[in-house]
Length: 362
Image (cartoon, rainbow, N blue to C red):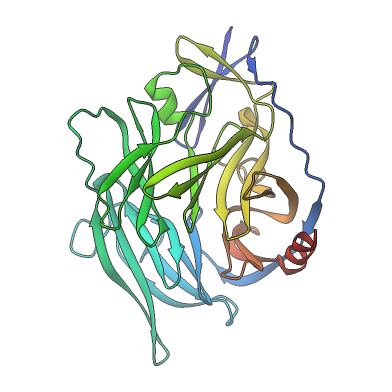
């Protein structure tokens, strides 16, 4: 294998090879349904390039360290009018150094203080037409195990159900996730590598990284740079793997424990992952990994969503009328919201109601 090129994707170093890749002989999954979704653009301009969003009741929450305060609230019924704000970056009381929005549930959402292994559970309150955000409680992960060797500490704490949380990590026994109780005390490590070949810890931490999404006892994992999807479900206090597969043919090579992507064939990147009680949604950048360019909208933002059901079946492709780099689902699943650059950053809306009816009828 010949060394060809080095590119940065986000903060992850990806190495490309030009020949002799490993090619999994998985069947390429076909999506029989495809829909085109037109967007509704709101006049509200977001003064950020990147951020995370969630939907709580009739409000959009936008979290970004590029704005002050870092949490802003927008009213959906009032054409995305800004109606509230919360939080500052800092190391003082009620401040955050690196707040990461990880989940929303009912009128709460989670902010992971990454380097501190903390999860702040925030609550949205509406009282007498007054809107406010309060910190309901803050949990500190208890993960001490003397025999463990951790290569990436726990982060992206997400609510699994009323009694459990899950997170991403990587430790020496090749476990990729953690299960915690309601106090954020470690119950177990679980999960397995998307590839069968031996890779170094640095490769597992960087090139096999991905995103998780959760909904009432079910966790979905999607790798960012390989077309791999897996489902885990809790049974008693054990996370069991329900399924995992490549939904497209991966192209990579292994050399001395290093995973190298094929420059001319490694295709597709998961930008975002969401799920509701029915479906799994992958915001998918359908281009070669080597083509990614953070400074170009068409090379870093996606206009395609892949939809799967809870059994891992391919349901549909959703073609969006504009590119987005973040998405969130309404509570009833009939609306999808995203951050688009048109050309300035703004919130856009896609109507899923007719598509959902069609899919349920099928």
